[in-house]
Image (cartoon, rainbow, N blue to C red; front, side):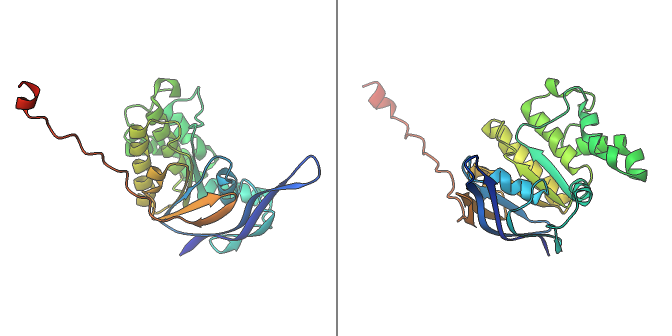
Length: 248
């Protein structure tokens, strides 16, 4: 079932001289429930703008965006805000954690806007989410005492705490080293899949894109399918030198 559908989406911004700068041009994209889609592109290619449109943080200049079959173009601000809180979870490159709040409080923050039982159980739910990302013993720790990988795990737990239908990840491994980034990305993909959420990852890293079910390249505002990235070449180790050659 198609959950997100973009049809001929374009986004332009006005320039001081009265001209316009095209950011996205004629973008078509379908994302199904439970699917992982990666969008690869260089800095300035329009990746973050596309993510903002998907997350209802921005509106297109032209085209149509359907969320679960519902056109979003005419939605009022209050309805858009409610959908952002109920449907989407966001993961950012710089974590965006509240610095003076513990890991548990950061994860529980989205539930402050929940109702009824979800609100009353917010602390317990936050602890359960931290357990799910392997940080069950770090709930009382503030972000500055956590490593970069741990902070991103907290951010993932926060994004998933309201069981979103869509997770939008903007360069989720960009602030991490390669090994930690791979671990965090694998965790994000598996956690989203476990909850049945669609996952859209914006990245410049082909290694991150390899985890997705489908991949696209965004270049100069235009989106096109991306062929399966070639595996990273493995350089063979040099053959051992016989001792006779070392010590004649």
